[in-house]
Length: 353
Image (cartoon, rainbow, N blue to C red; front, side):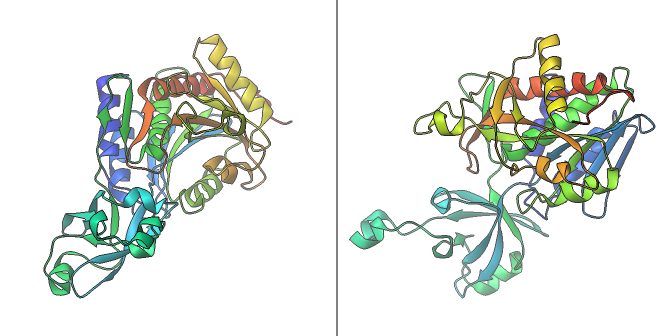
């Protein structure tokens, strides 16, 4: 991974993009993609679409969603504490004790989520599972009036953002690896493919609002009308305690991207991905899912008259937490795999089952 690509990953991980509030990170995507794409556009939904060789055939679409889970300010009480709604799927237990940032029109405001100390919890309270409605964000103000000078109802909140490397330097953790890694792979695959001969028209899309219903993939796929689509998202790494591999599959960090098989995926797309991995000595893992996936691949497959769809997933430990962990090697290899896959498609390629 070259320094410019790594810097792009770091910048998008440090930039907020809760579902519906993706503009700050989309600004970075537009800036980065302008350096290698023939066209960079933004649709009315907020999807950023970068294209190489727009006159080629067939149209191939890569989708990596840029949005992350977050919170939304719902209420400011008389003491200036903020009560929130979830954006996306949360385990409220993860939020207790976390440093948060409220992203306001006036700039970021630091906050914390906590609860009364264990010394003050009753025996019954110690047994209770924390619920979202019982949590609040403390931004360190005196009262509601002071809070209202800084924060408005409807402001988004995220974990304190940033990336850290592990002892094994290829491993890194950050909030929003789901799915800024997929966004990174989509744009990086387009950049790498742009340096080679392309017959297809290749579109890389930074999609919005995946976490609340695959919404950006639905609208952008309709607009592009691709014949072939690859969604890039994260999947659960099962190489840690308490996860049953017999139920969830055998997926490890650092062993390559996961190529999924199942009814959400076009078999010819899958076999082409596997063949490209073999031909270019790219490590990969296989995953299986027997139903429509909870990824952009689901929306892409059934758009318009149907899209020949594949799903490439990045192994991720501790999903939807502030310490989502991935391997930088896995995302680097995923970008190469997709670039090679796209380079081998031409107008004579057949994907009809």
